[in-house]
Image 1 (cartoon, rainbow, N blue to C red):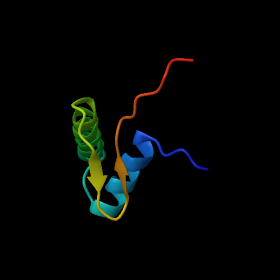
Image 2: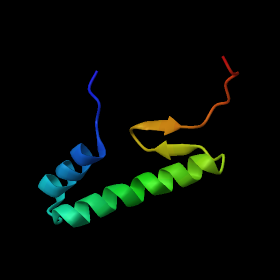
Image 3: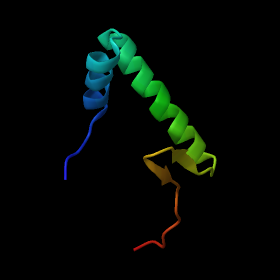
Length: 61
């Protein structure tokens, strides 16, 4: 299993889209912030052709 970091995502946007490195980083941060905000609000996040994310409650250990 590979861990994909923010830097990896930013670099991929930079190489494939052609934005500057700063713009690529800002774009990735904006997308992740939006996903986090939706999850924090209790919403389910669906990324078409990728997956669905939601927060699930777990009992304490």
